[in-house]
Length: 279
Image (cartoon, rainbow, N blue to C red; front, side, top):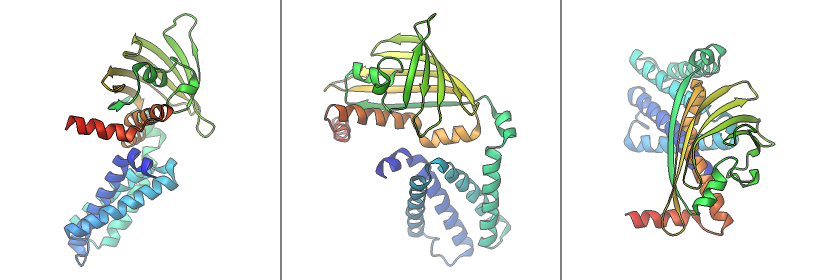
């Protein structure tokens, strides 16, 4: 559960703070003041954070509902406050708006109109491993599929015409399959690479982009890894989900833990030592 909380901290914090503020606002205007205080706001935040975490653990596939509910409840509370209606009307309006938002974000019309939206993401982290170990675990096609950091790389095939072009298949027994065409633009082994990719999901969804990966060697058999990705062709719900998932940072954390465990090291203690050295 702790790993879920770390990976989903953006989503949980947004959900908790949004609903806590809604509770604070409605209680301040309409209520008896139980939540219309700073202490009440703090208690509400902790309460909704626990609810958000429990929801994600129980229904991980529907984790995206949290941000839609939060957005709708904020809109409902503001409208309810402005028109001076009782809290129940604000709650009912929020519930209705949540249903509409969920339907719209996944409607064919919105998907068609928003196709081509861009998401730029960046993540960086210290990793307790050598450059060659990180390269083999992070770059598709540079080692056996079983060595890939998150275990979801099924297979890859190099193009007969271009050795820098790959056709990669991702997926596990519990997830859908994704095909990716990948072409290296720049590749300096164990140091830096830049590649263009095209994703083609079974559902028919398509997106493409460019990813940069830089590995800088540090002291104590460690490296500093930076990943930058620019991806086009995403719909609004996918952009929201990917941002709240903070997926590049999540991937780097999984990479660091896997490589640390393989060599009997403690990645969490290593990061504490790095912070101590910096400060």
